[in-house]
Image (cartoon, rainbow, N blue to C red; front, side, top):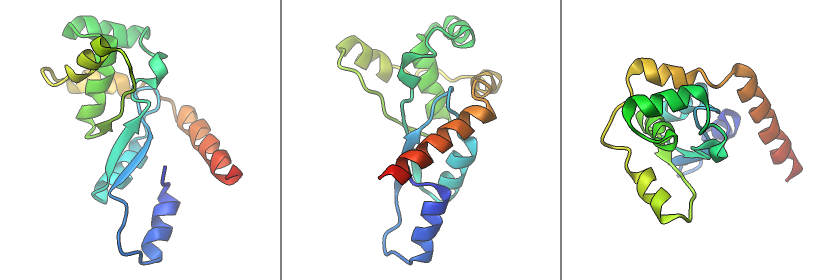
Length: 141
């Protein structure tokens, strides 16, 4: 994860090639709208790792309701949300049926209202805690 500050340092250092992609955790459980906008505004592709939040939200009531509404799985709802945010999605599975399921997200669109329901699953405190954890990890290196 390249933070805002890291990126600004790279710009100030006049490096010849700026990052083209920045990968960090993004999902309906960790929606980092400010970070996504910051990098997308600079034509940097945001690659969403942990796009399914390790499966922890698959039983979430809001996601379950949307899965029923769209006749999709909860995972497909979460992945579609990421695509509609303009993200490159990174999903990890060794199960062929899940691989097929994860690729079947281009035949529907979430409404703006439903997208906002998923946006609201992340609290400001969630993002602050995650950012602090990333700072601690970076400082430990």
